[in-house]
Image 1 (cartoon, rainbow, N blue to C red):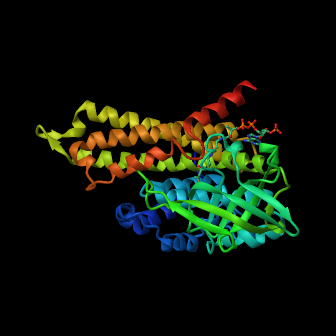
Image 2 (cartoon, rainbow, N blue to C red; image 1 turned 180 degrees about the vertical axis):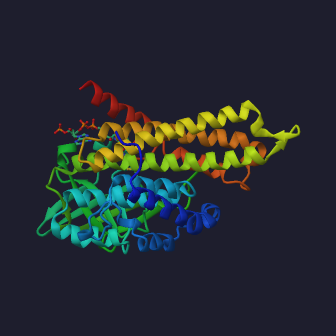
Image 3 (tube, rainbow, N blue to C red; image 1 turned 45 degrees about the vertical axis):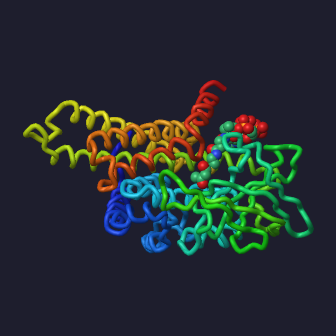
Length: 379
Ligand code: CAA
């Protein structure tokens, strides 16, 4: 058993940490306040090769693995969870299904520019009437000659409006629900595709979350991903890996909050001594650190399993469940360590706390993770 990261992983961590500190952190609070997405940050990530970490060089990636990708999401989220999820949705929700199920032509046409960072990816599964019950979708895709005609809408789309490539799911056989679901690659300039309402959110406010709408949207057959009827499995398998990216995001948010709380507890003087001298504070920090380390180990384990071609669905659901709850707990405690100052926007911990909440909700609520885990351990 080997718990030490390789030189390559350490190098990627250092590179992303420096990038996050110098290029992402300085504007994080301002972008959060203004709900502003900054494409330049994505472009800079592309220059560093971060937009294609796990994909082979032949598809424009840097040929590393899912552990390196998780480390990158973690380090970005340590300063800005919105930037963390930008990379996570781009890589594991949009890139992964194309890498796994795409034809050679689809990989060259769509995955390569995404990996090289000239295009941004997104994933569309959720609909107004189907969230946790993903199989209850209504969007349809009707075959007409050499193309499909898509009608319907998807909501809560991370990278919505800024993405160029959307992996979406629609019913080619509305009578069969899951078995009638098919995956498609929709490009943002397709006629009949439009971006709807942009959500105003509690957290990850500089990550755009929108509705996407299909009104007689013509999608060429060559943009179908996988076979007809294979879409639900593609959606589920994509989420298996995607969830670990969210776990990595949660680890990063929690670590960022702990870093801030430790610094503050050592500096803040009350009753003539730093507040860290009180066990009420220092034990809190110890619990926070322990839960983060456990979350990190679960996350890295799932990433390692995926990188080594082993089953990782259960482990990924566990990492998201544990890390998401940890992020919420740790960030709430960090605000407590800061006291009244923690409740203000003068410090980043209130932002971390707001950002943490979504990790318990998206890519499957914590309740869905429990459902997935319990099914897997009892089947
Ligand atoms: N891998 C492969 N196949 C899978 C699978 C997996 N992980 N999970 C299910 N399947 C297959 C099943 O084997 C089954 O196929 P067969 O009939 O051939 O055996 C088929 O899919 C249907 O499976 P279920 O009967 O289990 O389906 P279900 O309707 O009971 O749903 C569920 C299962 C786990 C609850 C699923 O609906 C689910 O994951 N819901 C949560 C959805 C979710 O996470 N949404 C988040 C969207 S992304 C997002 O958050 C936005 C963003 O941009 C960040």
